[in-house]
Image (cartoon, rainbow, N blue to C red; front, side, top):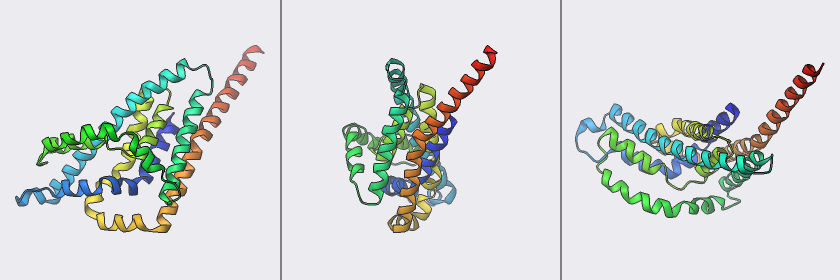
Length: 244
């Protein structure tokens, strides 16, 4: 299962450009703040608010992972199909492949996946106004928790991966690792937003990102099949040895 956590972390790491597009403007405004007090604009305060925001966002991902991990565990346990776990991972891989094509401009799957959670988001988003001005770490953290529910195709693909994890705890940790993967890029957004936006428009970088996402998609069912066959082979060898 640790392989799934690594895959989830890499998915978060390579989705940085998409995260910048979705949350970059909000995070930059949050970090700069609205106060005229010079101390609010020191680099240390900016960094602290950014960390608090991102911890809140990752907390929401983790909670969502716990919920879908529970649903996935119930599906796998109640399914009569021994390959239910693999089927869920294949679905997650297909969604990832579609998102990679979306990055290259060949498929509008991102708009479709993000429309799924729009109704929930329309209910959650207005709560953010009660946190303004975001001038404390707790307000930044709570604002991040709200923003963690923003409809995002890459987050949904990670949730599908959590769904296929098999247990509640594994589903929770899958989303935690995904969130940690997005952390490096999101922490630097406010400082390098212009550079990151230019990088996002770079065709070569988009191809590299898309190819890496396709490799991640392929690794999902492949890793499951490999470790499943390895486990079965080990069990068979152990049974044979015990028989002798």
